[in-house]
Length: 253
Image (cartoon, rainbow, N blue to C red):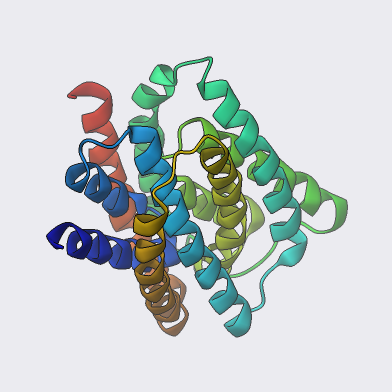
């Protein structure tokens, strides 16, 4: 019973953070690994995806009801992310991601420094692409991050948020909305893979999904209520936590 309470609380907090800036896996995955140490890692990751996809989808729906989602960017990016996430999952079975594990902390540090330096970064919504150019960059970013999510994964939501602000001129709130749509596609591709290979704890995953959705609805409402400045602050906190976690995983574990 205690284990379920821990997993439920972790799912709720993960859903709330993930709805704002991504990075909910920082909470949810360690909780699964610590409470269910005898379960295969692939099964725990699959269970986390089963819980997380519902929260991410709920956040995407919540955003779409309150703000204008840039579907001309979100749709092609989501399709590319879905396809490339499968390829990333296939690639990781043949090429160990060790090089990326050591590179990731430095990429995240660069993201954090850039965001800190640009005080107005993500504060103004001024899209810079349209038409075919918009779709091309959407596919490029969606496909690239989709492959990364299937191949390795940590920080996927935060990377999407940063890239949609940096290369599309979105503010943090609009970028967060688009990121949720793309993240659902990534999670769905991974979930289909885990389900096909039998790596799912259905009862645990669905229980966590309920609380993940509850946290996600609260998180998305907080983001919309407090705006891009609030999202930027949470983004920097989550990226800082990701830097610490990925540095530990890469060099000290």
